[in-house]
Image (cartoon, rainbow, N blue to C red; front, side, top):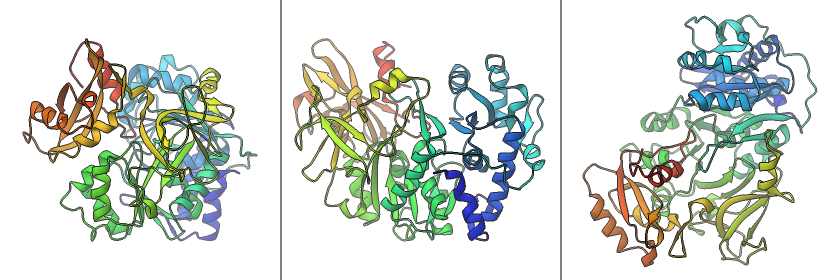
Length: 512
């Protein structure tokens, strides 16, 4: 299975159908095929061959989208990296991935200038920038692709087991790791998620989250597989997003919780303005029940929730189960298996909390160049997620928390999510993140960081007292509340509790 064959098929069978939309750009499948072929031929002209790595350090843009499709045709492995990377972080991932070419934007060129000498694997001729402004030491993307033929690149034998990408984990719990996915894995994304989300060739997928985030590919590949229209926005903006839903007739969208919360807080948020939607799915982090309930009241019968790891295990709560299984993130998707295991590795009965373990056809072959970490994560074919949860009698998963986020206070396990669910019920709280801080008496105690929906709506002490009166147990009472303007987040939009917690534990006691 070679996902590079999907676009040529649509260009041949439905050449005049709209394939891709980005701002004023609207491309048919035939036009998209030509753009992608020019890029594929350009990559080959710079000396890359099957198995070589091409890094793409771009914000949402046509060039980033084209890079996924072009590398698939020629067997080059695409390495999407966050455009927010700088200095040592950027150098580390470019070196770790063995990239021999990089496509970036002009604003990142200054950063690359200072680190080129540390990147021996990338020839000086293989630094490409997408902007029109000329810059010494870089190749213009526009000039490079314009000089190439729009004819298909030479046929290359690509097997389903060949790698398609290396995606680096967001680093929410530690240093990023290069997760390898094959063409077979991405082909399964095409079929599993298009079925799970009830997509058809007539669907319209709208995406505004970061395209370098693996969660973006959960809708990108099904759209490509089916030949559905794919609408990409440069960044998430609530008003622009809601407007685009109506303008393009979007049927399927996927948002992280912070984006969904922002959308629900907009005066434009209404069933009428989002009438075309058939699926709105939350991904990337648990959506607290308070927000779930509000979303489903306004947009009934179209809400989904996905829990998953880039490494390759996914559950989906279907729209038909959204009301009947409150708090659940659904059963495993087709062909995937799940277990809940205790500390001794034995399977636990329904409703007992343990580590979530899964396997299936979207499982990564491993972390790039890290067999030691691969062996820790995958044991006997099962992925050990590091997440805690339980399954009900029907096999539906309920998340409790990450193992590493667990707070042990006075020997008692305290799950931050339980406290967060209480916090977000306060009318002044927009988002909440709870983690453990040092406590002389109990070892650890919960701290709550919050973002308010309106300034000065409540002070920290009032919110702490309000919360502590409502939590289920005394050990869940928070010692402190910190009000923040925003949380540190990954490119994917995930809240980085690790950064807040590490800052506090380091003794600075100030949150970024």
